[in-house]
Amino acid sequence: MRMRTTKQPVIRILSMSMVMLAAVGLNTGAYADTASSGAKSVPSTALPSSAPAQAPALTEHVLHLIKTHQLVELRTIYNGPFAAAMFFNPQTLNYSVILLKHHDFWWVGETADGHKAEELYTKLATQTIRLAAPDLAKIQLDARIAVAKRSLEAQQKREKELAQQISAQQKIVQAGTAAQSQLLQEAEALDAQRKSLEEQLAATNKAVADLQSKAQAGPSMETFNNRIAPQQPTSESKPHLKSRIQIRATAHP
Image (cartoon, rainbow, N blue to C red; front, side, top):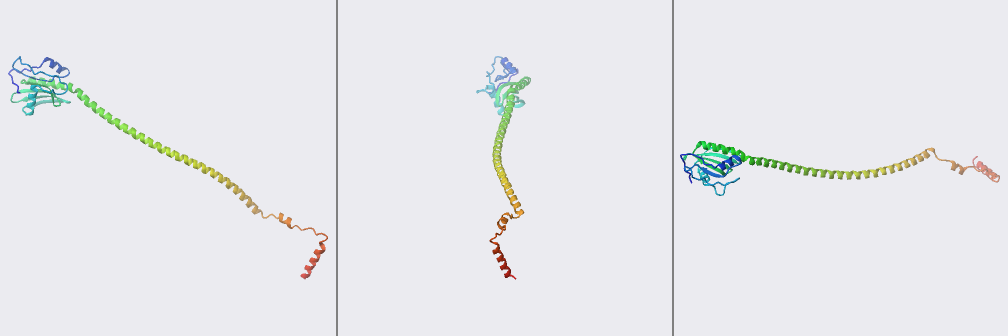
């Protein structure tokens, strides 16, 4: 539906809508100039984040003109997901001023007064800053939360790796300590064996030294002398001995 142009360009914007526009937001709706002072604007519906299920007639009309490339884009400003734009229709000489979030039309106004269109566009452009503030804050907070989560995951991974490393090191130390304890027991047993062998060696060395001393002293003749000591001849044996000596003497002249 194409709106009629008028010779008296006046933008009929409800005072309540402008108060809300200047305060915290806008009423979603469509407003257009009209030649009749009794003409009513298209009813508006409050919409905080998305377009209404049934868009106002002027919104549908301007959207159709944009899709069919009948409007020339004069100005556009972006703040986060919000944008304020001003279009010009070369055929009807009308201006369309739009406030939108992403692809959702929040507010549409149409006028043939270029000055009024510039004022409205400036007001909407200013409002995009305030309207986009929560979205921009959310974008930054989401990014910070994502970074914090990645840092947390990295630290948790590092913590797990360090715990595993410490556990592995403890197992190695425990195994090494057990091995060293076994070696210590073996060393103590070997030391006891060494002492025993040294005692045996000392006793053997003493015995060898004694035997060597005896060997170097020569044989003892006391027992032999006692066995072969000459006996004193008796009176009865003297004649007999003498005859034997005489016999030997005669045997070897």
